[in-house]
Length: 216
Image (cartoon, rainbow, N blue to C red; front, side, top):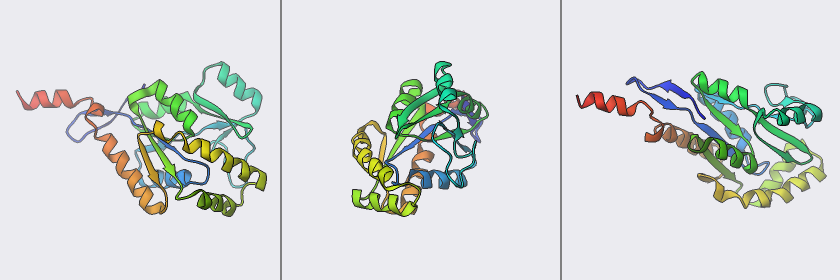
């Protein structure tokens, strides 16, 4: 699925990386995603479509594409999503076209999605997908983080905590699993994983030609 992306200094290209971050709500994936985007100009965020209401401070088209249920259903019927899921009474999905456009322009794509979305994306794109699951240091700490965000009512926080155990149970569907007990340390580990994955032999699509040239 992924198009050839940036050119190596030695003249050969590599395949794009579809870089997935998942975690229970409040475990820190969105914070780490923002830090990655600020740190790496070759990485672009996949912006999901959602039927949930916009929150104070969010920007349509930047944080999410906010659509109504009818439009979301139309997009599903038209096969416009790479993946989609029903979460906490709302629908979330990854539109295909922006992802394809980013890959074709030479950029890697970052996904902030749950285990269902990661699974669907892997089924479509296979080896182009790198999946990282971020764990909280404890469920008590996770609960405290959700409370301190002050963005959701108590009943929603309770629902997120109830869902967290189910999400954590899918840890073995990921390539890497990290514990976020220090956000800076976790960020540096995630950044190192991305750098290593970009250098994998399987992604260096021009490597064979380069080596043949060396051996002439």
